[in-house]
Length: 218
Image (cartoon, rainbow, N blue to C red):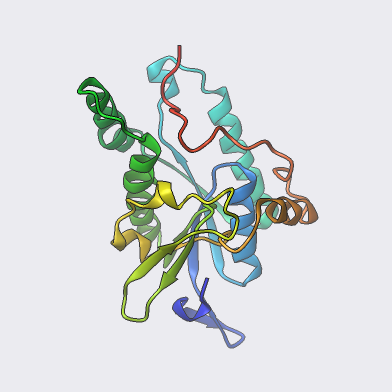
């Protein structure tokens, strides 16, 4: 991402920013945090919980493992770790509209709604409230920030992993505060970076594809 838009503070003559990175516990968000840390920015990892497994009677062990993996990565990188729950927001902004849409015969993609309302709108607002200047994720996409204030979503270098379709509904207000450190990398390069840094997530399997419906079980 263009360093000219990172305009908070200075250390040793370098322009720095405070960046909140959404850490899921996977290799992509791990490397996103690592790259930002290497560039000298003040980085904090934010792990989002969007589903109440206890209330819904679903298996929460996987979610707990993901949270612990995210915490371990932050510890390894020497950055802060912060957990936040967006369970209520996910229910009202993503789950209920999805169920209502299915009932009326609509074909909806819950990941598009989740990115728009949770992983960017809510997360970005939370990051700014924590004192961050930017919100970053491990999505495979690029963003071009204009000095005039607008931002353009661009496809990732790795066409096989490009996620811009699922980010197309992200509002401009959130996009203007977003960074995608992996946009210029290919997946194999991301894994290699993680392995070289001895991150335990380097060989971790990817979760199911972006279009998976994660909240339906049984």
